[in-house]
Amino acid sequence: MRVLIVSQYFWPENFRINDLASGLAERGHEVTVLTGMPNYPEGKIFAGYGFWIRQEEYKGVKVIRVPLISRGNGRSLRLIANYMSFALSACLFGPILCRAKSDLIFVCQLSPVTVGLPALLLKKIKRIPIMFWILDLWPESLSATGAINSKSILKVVDNLVRYIYRGCDKILMSSQGFITSILAKASKSANPDYFPNWQEPEYSMAKIIPENLPEGFRIVFAGNIGSAQNFETIISVAEKLKGNLDIQWVILGDGRCLEWVKEQVELRNLSSSFHLKGRYPAEMMPSFFAQADIMLVTLKRDPAFALTVPGKIQSYMACGRPIVAALDGEGGRLIIESGAGLSVSSEDVDALADAIMTMYHMPKDEREAMGKNGKDYCEENFDRDKLLNRLEVWMQELIQENNNNYSAL
Image 1 (cartoon, rainbow, N blue to C red):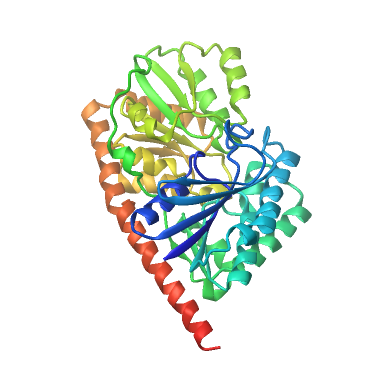
Image 2: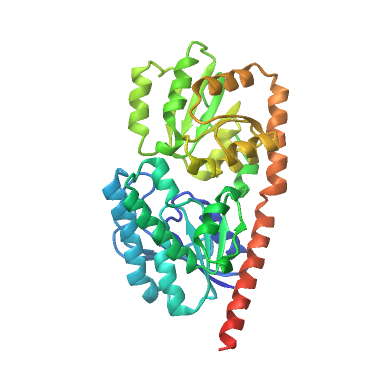
């Protein structure tokens, strides 16, 4: 198959679309990615990249980059400029730069949903179907993060989402909790299917790296440090437990709330137990995870986030580490169902502190059994090869259906 992927984010930014694209290329498919200049999460264009069009290769994948306005500090106006500039740039340059024949367009929709606009244009020009993978539910996530509170603006975004969804031939969703919202907006022919995040290959091959984590009971959080991740709760729990000098918090990542977190660590005298290690390449994460006693995942309390399964859960599971979570809905259900750890309600400081202390006092072999439960569940339900097999079948069916429709004209 000749697959054209449209994604605002791509390597060297760290998202699973990188592994999906390279996985399809490994299987002999011709894969091209239309994307922007990398700038997530720092908010500035990565070193070595400029403003103008660029083409390169990543693991057998042809990468076409178009200019965009970087996200900066992630504030509303700059973020809107970032979202709209990619959509406009991809619409202007995509038809010229992606002239080669393609069989299918695959859209990776994190934030923003506007990534669907250039895909719709390319669909019309190329007369090929769109497969749309939803990892972030709009407009619900905009309201949940506080990015937009205006009901009139949210209504406009809702109409845009409906327009994009109804132009798609097949919709995939990363969480089964998304189904009600999708069915209300998409056409019946889109036939939504569940396509979750998977365990990435490197997460089963962890080796300890020279930089060891602090001695003690290590609680490791990895990923974006943003408003959705609810660091207010994490910091409050760390303050509540700071009398236990054995408990060490290790934060691997970056994001727009990082400066606030640093300020709170100083203000609440947590420097000896709260360690902000910064962002590392994805391939190094398993080595850090291997040193963790428990892994931590949190989200804000909001109906939209209750529908979401953070992708880091699969990564934690794949490394066989026990998990403590403060999550409502789908994410918490997955951790409990798999037996991979403990989950409490979002933003419940006392319950999260109690869960951590339960893990702290739990015999190590019981914690390790939880980690093994998660790993086994992950291998059964989130195996990369199984999911890519499923994706190939859906793609081939969609291409064949499209070819039959045009043959009948």
